[in-house]
Image (cartoon, rainbow, N blue to C red):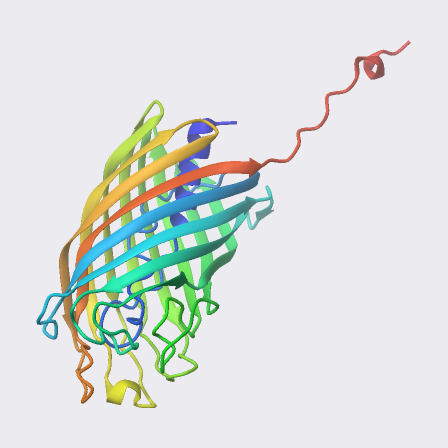
Length: 337
């Protein structure tokens, strides 16, 4: 087995399935509306690991302030997330690509500071909530190797099975709607150098309680690393922005509409290949965060804000099962008269 390839592919697999949460209750008016934490796919390689079943354990923290025209008190917001996921690589090929599938369950601890009722989800000032985020499944992922290049295309889905609470269903960690996440990743890998660009978009269905629909969220995440023996190091960067408007036909939240936003971040990644397992750590700081278009309501919901802060990720990935190699023939069966 090529351990360098396995570690790099697992790093990609681990990063790929990192489910996150922008802010509980903020899928609708009042802040970021992503289902997957920006920066989650940093380090992701457009490569598939050898056949087997892999487990990914990840933890990350997001520490931030709310900024924007409607944020006057600069409240602190934090999210601490633990993720357990499995990647299955059966060794199948389809359309010339290697097939893999992923399932992930995130657990989230989330809190806000002094600002009252951020996002209208029912969170009082100083609230801290914990629970399971929506489960992430990726039933169809294909990877092609083209010389020194790799290409991965897949479709991830956030299932609305997380903790749902509040008048509009957005006061808990989960969300009462589906999120579909088509993704395209391309990379160049040669002589220990690796450059990967990962693009994906989140497309949300209507909230079944409030009838509110959050606009599409676009992510672009870039990794440029060099491997020295068992060590990998390099810079990373990401962009996330809402690219379509929200829809609020039922006038939930007193008719409020959430804002569009754009966030840019830069950071660095460090990984080590232990052989049977690989560990990666990356940190990203949001250097720019802007927002526009949100409007407050008679209920004083803070509708035109965005978070700006830093994130630290740590991921451990390893193989838990591999197909058995064919048994070696017995010597007696090889002897003929």
